[in-house]
Image 1 (cartoon, rainbow, N blue to C red):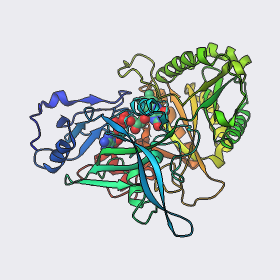
Image 2 (cartoon, protein in one colour):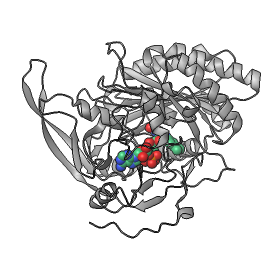
Image 3 (cartoon, rainbow, N blue to C red):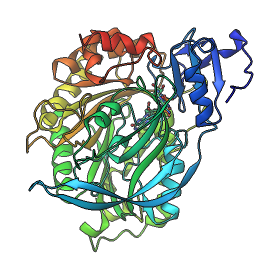
Image 4 (tube, helix red, strand yellow):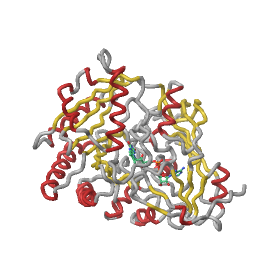
Length: 487
Ligand SMILES: Cc1cc2nc3c(=O)[nH]c(=O)nc-3n(C[C@H](O)[C@H](O)[C@H](O)COP(=O)(O)OP(=O)(O)OC[C@H]3O[C@@H](n4cnc5c(N)ncnc54)[C@H](O)[C@@H]3O)c2cc1C
């Protein structure tokens, strides 16, 4: 197939990420229309200069999209969801025999958003177990990088983890470096977890462009969400850390989970305890119907604009009561944030770092004390710190969900992300540069898509997030520097 005649107007090829912290001008910026088209572009090395970088919704806030002089593919036309079907696969059991199992999957193009996929699944009585706050992100833009959500319930595929999109992927097809199609499956022909598949999950698109994806879904899981709001008082770091940890332990023992945002400037913290309703029966939620739309609207605003509105602290008297309880038939689909917020308005900026949950109390206590000491010294504090808990599979080869050694006690990862309302604020940048040093000392693992300013740290730290053998056809300088730092 012949690629279409794109307009090669260099000056018009510039684009920015959501936070407007990166601007790049690829030599060629192409709206791809089909798998054939992508194959043709990748195979035409003379016409389309390397590296070739696909885009999802361009939400990543590092320089991962930087591609001056290269070829960037805008994938937004490839956003069809094809349907839901049951798949059979062979799986090896502990005694060495193989068993045929079934999993229900949704088949999708790479540029369908997580929100579109979740709404589609829910329409048919299913849900994607991963339901992050962000709904705008695409499946193609998340499967090979970091993602996170305090998910609940059980994984539809036993042993594949829960709480990132990678844990839902059953199979995908990529266009490889010479333009051929190549399929990767979660299980190999022996019924074991396929390690090439696992390697791709942390490849950051350096080995292929995902063009077709099968995501495992499950029947909708009704959920009960208790909202806790508590005012912050001086010297309360350890109390907050213990409270979140104990609530998570308790929720987790009921297949539930916890999301928390610890406000600094707002003077209160917010905790959502999410438990499958079947494991928490007979709980009254008299305001659920009225509260759900209000709360979703409020959360959308709070996240998009990074604004934990101070008067919300007055609700602390209702904290954890039935008046702040929701009962939903499935986790809500992620939010569809405003795509173009000007620099002079509030908008979310954050930096991701993952730690083993076994260090939760230590890390969160010390982290909150770090923030307090920093404020005293420099007069700056982030808006809040957010925590999310992800169940690891034990199979991941890099990033925050990888473990050198898997132990029975260390089953989950938590992320501990400072958030701020002005992505370009120099004081925020200064704060992050020193907070990252502390995070690294505490054994945290960053992300090269979600840890803002990661390239300003020792690159060996960021190299913990990447895996595999990058192809020069797909690898830009930003990503290459982290692979180089691995050597
Ligand atoms: C306001 C806001 C809120 C957020 N909240 C959350 C949250 O709750 N949870 C969470 O996990 N993350 C969150 N994020 C981070 C965001 O989800 C991730 O950065 C995600 O990777 C972005 O998806 P995207 O579709 O925009 O990908 P992009 O940023 O467009 O791309 C990410 C990477 O994937 C590559 N890529 C894109 N498409 C393909 C493809 N088809 N094949 C191969 N590689 C491809 C790109 O080249 C790039 O390297 C948030 C971000 C913002 C801005």
